[in-house]
Length: 270
Ligand SMILES: [Zn+2]
Ligand SMILES: [Zn+2]
Image 1 (cartoon, rainbow, N blue to C red):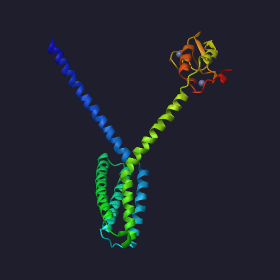
Image 2 (image 1 turned 45 degrees about the vertical axis):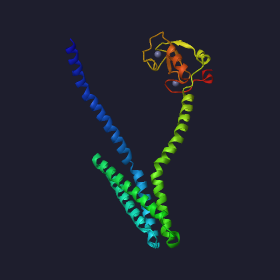
Image 3 (image 1 turned 60 degrees about the horizontal axis):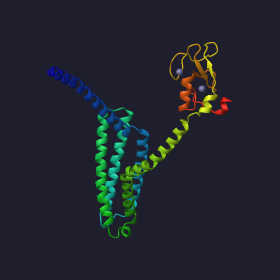
Image 4 (image 1 turned 30 degrees about the vertical axis):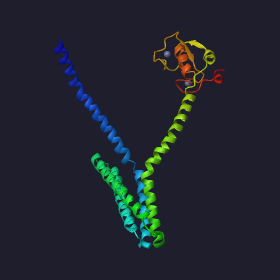
């Protein structure tokens, strides 16, 4: 007997395991796709980033062209490196835009994301080196003020770029409780139930197909109306009627018509 039950168990497990694996795989794929799509898909966001990057690149190249480059530490090398990274970043953005426009495969988009991450890592390392050169440079502001200010601006932008997730997290931490409170307040307002005195003011009637034109079934319980059923016609519309018990139960939860959502108040009953 025991062997039999074991066999059954094993068969069940072997039947269930592929299903579980399939579900896990689907779930993983769905999450992965959602992350990649949300990261890459917004073409308007890519366009804005591209425009900002172009503006930054053109400004930096112009300033760099007119700046003196004679400093203790190679700040000019830092700026050139920064501009090259910017150009690479713009190239990736352009490719991302095109991959969305021409609906490229997920593999292409994933590869772009990997390249983007590598460039981001390179940018971070270069920023650390630039920081070191900037803070160990003696008299840079006197020797080459324009170049030093440019290096300072690029370092500041780098801080902004890498601190953006932190700012977003702080923003979300502040916004989330506020949103939650607002939603709770709205929900309280929407789910305001009717008072017993208001419910008692609604007079019941007996259903008859000749007098009650509209739905043939009660929207709350889905049961067909039968001649003689005790119903309540709400004041919003003569076609909005429900079983008396259904309607009263509904109004004890929510003081609005189940059909048209119009609030049921003392004023519109009288
Ligand atoms: Zn009903
Ligand atoms: Zn109604």
